[in-house]
Image (cartoon, rainbow, N blue to C red; front, side):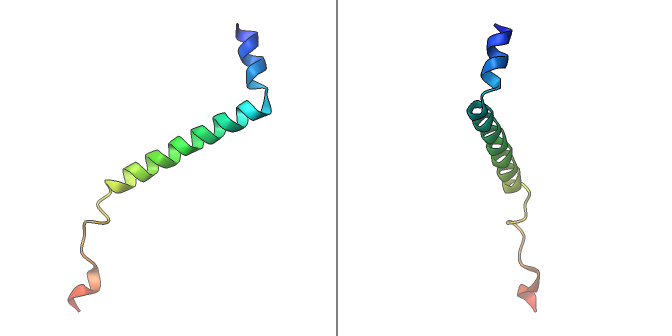
Length: 49
């Protein structure tokens, strides 16, 4: 079974989709965390001038 998985992982198409999915999940996590950063909740500093 392990050799089948290794052979499957050596396929360039499988590696491309796995890496693409991995990086997409990382980007989604960063966007999700950016929403909680509070940058959009503050007022613009130059509004009072």
